[in-house]
Length: 389
Ligand SMILES: Cc1cc2nc3c(=O)[nH]c(=O)nc-3n(C[C@H](O)[C@H](O)[C@H](O)COP(=O)(O)OP(=O)(O)OC[C@H]3O[C@@H](n4cnc5c(N)ncnc54)[C@H](O)[C@@H]3O)c2cc1C
Image (cartoon, rainbow, N blue to C red):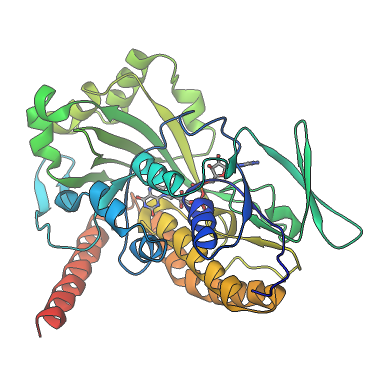
């Protein structure tokens, strides 16, 4: 970057924003990072993510955090199982030699947070709007303060980005699928049969219109999703998350007729439930470059979680934006180059995620899941062949 430093603001300390802040910090470029949450411990960050070698893991390597990553990566949790709703096991992949280890979101966030100076993040800063100034720069308007001016504002503020409206008029659209999240604690000791059912990794059980997906997290915790193809307001009308016993009762009713062994997952759930309607931006979402504003991660290309690409794509965005900024004498051109590459790169995973969201819970979803898994096994076998050659 030119010797005349520019002022960069990053909005959002999710995996994308934190990775960008870290990469620029390593390159000696200072940023101001604003996060809505009041502190690093305001809330647990959610479930488990698999980090891919060519994106999430690459980002951590560029950030100099591979050792820390290896301490939190769970290579032993890469298994996959698929059941029919009557409990028949359709697929069991217990091979742990793949290169998509799981990592708990909170552990990933802590790793990135600890890699930044303690005062790097302005916590409790909920962006209301980005205000363009007459000099071509931008101020950030928060509930009680105004910060700026900034030459470049990076919106890493997720699905409902407040930066996005400056470059795009699109809003995420409901995908037709709603996830109802539940958790099971201390599964190996308290529920050994469920531990065995799920195995080391993730399990799914599908039928038309509804499915169960359960993922093993660290610390013997399972995070489950009951997934429904329903109108967006259906779950709010049907379920009361403040009443755990009513939640369990209603969910068991929705899965009536399923094998008891699968329903035991719902019976064993703890008292934390959440409704998560799944939204996505249009496949191929892009915008005309506007000097001083850009987006990364979900703010730029929110997709349904079925492809398992969201966090990986966000971290790769950070790698590419940082590389362009560090390597260029003209930061405006660097941002243009990042955007042009990113629009092309994410089109395929976004298309695949949209395809999965459209076919999930349909009459062909089981068949597609099996075919998808077979393709993944072939890819893995080919990669291991070429590694041993
Ligand atoms: C149920 C579910 C399961 C998923 N599973 C997977 C998976 O297995 N694998 C995978 O790769 N992806 C998965 N995803 C997608 C993944 O969570 C996202 O793609 C990823 O978190 C995107 O990272 P990000 O940094 O762009 O945004 P986020 O993680 O959303 O981070 C945005 C940050 O910005 C902050 N913020 C928001 N608004 C403001 C504001 N106005 N002012 C200041 N700060 C703000 C937020 O508090 C947050 O810290 C899943 C998503 C869902 C919903």
